[in-house]
Image (cartoon, rainbow, N blue to C red):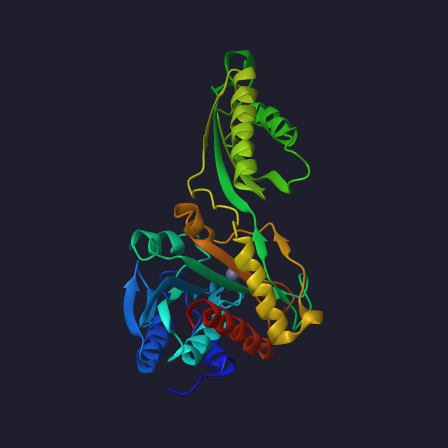
Length: 367
Ligand SMILES: [Zn+2]
Ligand SMILES: [Zn+2]
């Protein structure tokens, strides 16, 4: 099998944007190519995930390279449309091209190529973990293209440090009564107002980036003269470390519960989508990624580490199996106007450099 060009793979994948857990054409394309290269391929991992493996002749670590595959849903002029607005087609393209270059280069250990489904649903990594294919991983390497807001085109960052993130559902239950007799009821909207004030008064150590804000509220309005007995709120919460997130959620629960109780209401606080863990990277591995970036694009294109308030389900791997040494780098691909924008465009000429860093890292660890 000849070396594949990530720009050509990108062109192919960009034409078949599919939503998380529905990446049927994308995963078949990637699995077929891996198989043709001589990888031992397992399909349908936790849904639509694909793994390709090559083993060296000598013992060594299991090194996993991971790319995500899914696109995002948009509603444009009333029509549903899937678009690769986060660049996951670029990630799969860089990884498949790296896989093609690594055939015959794995001397020790195991190279595991993972094409992961459903990153945008934040359930893909968990599905892969449940499939039992992460436990024996020693080293995990991920990557993501970066928008113009983060780093310049052609630059690469050795670490994208995502925050822990979650959305919190709050349900406040009061007591309905006639508008003329509010003293007989408990107004859930008033309790929600007190709760919002309490939420905005939460404090976490300000040297750690964090935020917590109400992003949805629903209640009352059935009739203008009925005291509302129920309010539902959504709170978007983020923190740069897992410890800060634990503290934030405890304080959020306390603030909401006590604020509601002050007016005689009760509150239920849940995180139905789970809590995405913050990035936890191995410093030595990250330093090696930085060295490889310098080898590929030169010192002047080595960008600083990025602190990113966005979530990434890649971090479930280390959160679940703390023995895994992980790193995750950013590829400046001139993505604009921004990720998750329906008009997002990137410069595919950035992709060969991403592929080259992946290849160099595997040569260091398994060559
Ligand atoms: Zn995204
Ligand atoms: Zn993404």
